[in-house]
Image 1: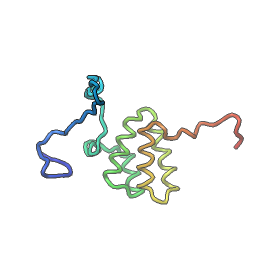
Image 2 (image 1 turned 90 degrees about the horizontal axis):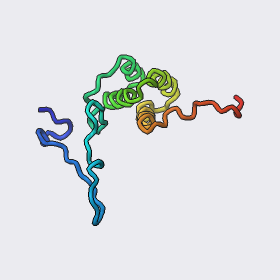
Image 3 (image 1 turned 60 degrees about the vertical axis):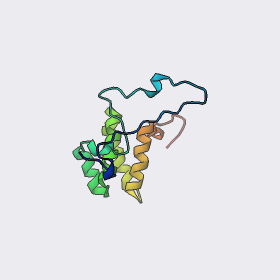
Length: 128
């Protein structure tokens, strides 16, 4: 078997910890596993993602390593219908970046948090 990271962990299952409040009980819904078919992002989940050609073009152009490229692909996969517009926005954003790999990771986090491109919606009271 392949164990990413530490070779001594081959064959071990991941440890899941549940924090129980003092004197409290655990709600089974809090420890439920994710729904089948739903992709769960973990530290090494980017290794299992198929990189689309458009994302590979961005990675090659801006010098992103495979980890950052995989994380970007994961975030865009979750974005769904917005992914095409997000790819165009990433090109524009990264063209201006001093450190494209670092900025890419910031934008990936914004995508996962749902705050990516939030400020782009125009305000009727603001003149450009």
